[in-house]
Structure formats: structure tokens, C-alpha cells
Length: 265
Image 1 (cartoon, rainbow, N blue to C red):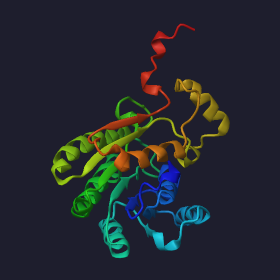
Image 2: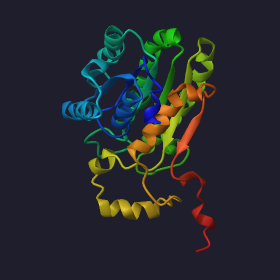
Image 3: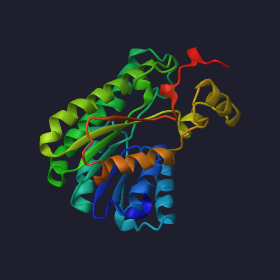
Image 4: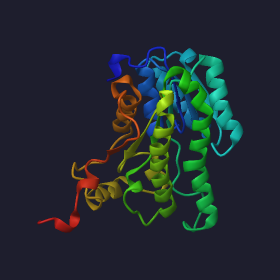
């Protein structure tokens, strides 16, 4: 897909693009001709993304970077205002930012943890979406949110994360309906088990990953990659998906179709 230049002359904002899926998406959108605004809290992560873009042959003139937490209103406004100031328009918003737990949190069901997860995974996305709507209406642009298959199944380790992703799915349905008359599409990508920095941050080793593939009952027998997910983001945000809105696209190696209770071997 990267050779087709699907986004020539278009501008894409990608939150949480200092690592993982967002980072891979930034590179792939740029390879497809887009000017990109990248975002993250980690200066070193943003520098890594910049380096990857440079190595892909993307000029600095087509890249803008915003550092900060999406829980800060000033950061959200900067994402929109600085993008429009530099590139003159917004065509695509990729709401990729998300967390499973507040850093340092020992009680996953504390109300402090709930508030923080909700503010990052839901509130900030709604707020940033509202700020971009006037610009997306002008370009007949679209929004893709990165959700998760845990919106459709339970995971006892991160209950509030699961709940926030279920809310994000219904946000997409509601806003797809609300914004359709403005010519703005809204869809969600719901990744399954994906091999990103999220795992290493939680102390997951390579050996543990191999065991987890079996425990997760992934029919395709492997972890997804950030590049797998980036390919779908590019497709969903492109004109090739112009008749799709309000959809949750599961990219999970088949996890949701597997039924361990009925295995015969």
C-alpha cells in the first residue's frame, strides 16, 4: 500500500506516535504522501519517530511534533492549532493514545486509576475530536480511533482499560452518526495481541510472549505487529474506505473467533 501515495497533499494528526502502532502509522502515512503531526510524552520516543521518518526519506517540512500529555487542554489545542498553522488543513485524525493503568498504580480498581484511564482513553479523545471537527468538515476528512478487542471480551488484569475501550467503540458509533451529514467518517481499529513496547513496560520477556501466544489461543499463531495495525489505519483513513463509517474492525489473528471450550485436541 505504501507505494500508492494515497495521501498526497493531505495532513494527518497521530496521537501517541512516539512508539508502537502510532509510530509505525506515522511512517506509513508519510510514505503515502501525507504531512504528519506526531505526538507523545517521551522526547526520546519522538526523536526516534523523527529518525524513522528521516530514514524513510521524509523531509522535515512534512513533519510537525507536539510533546505533552493529552490530559492537558493546552496540548490538545496545540495539536490542532499548530497543525493548521504549519500545514493549512487537517484531513485525518488518528486517536491512538491510550493507557492500561496509571503509572505506579498498585490497585487497578482504585477510583484514582479509573479517573486517569477515563481521562486519557475517552475524555481526551472526545475533546480532541471536537476541536478537529471544523477542520475535518472543510476537507471531508475522517477519524480513526485505536480501540482494542478487550472492548468485546474481559481481561481481569485491566478492568478499567476494558471498560474505556468499550466506551470508545460506542463513541465511534455515536459520532459516526452525528458527523455523517458533515461528510466526516468515524471508525475504530480494534487490535488484538500486538507486540509493542506496552509488553516490555509490563516486564514481558520474549519467552513469556511465546507462551502467551498459546494461552491467548491465537489461531494464526503469532503476535500482531505495529506494522500490521498501521496498514489497516492507512486503509481505513483512505478514500478506499470512503463508504465505511461507524465500524469496529477487529485485527486480532482470530482471537475473537476461537472457542477454547470446544477444542477437540
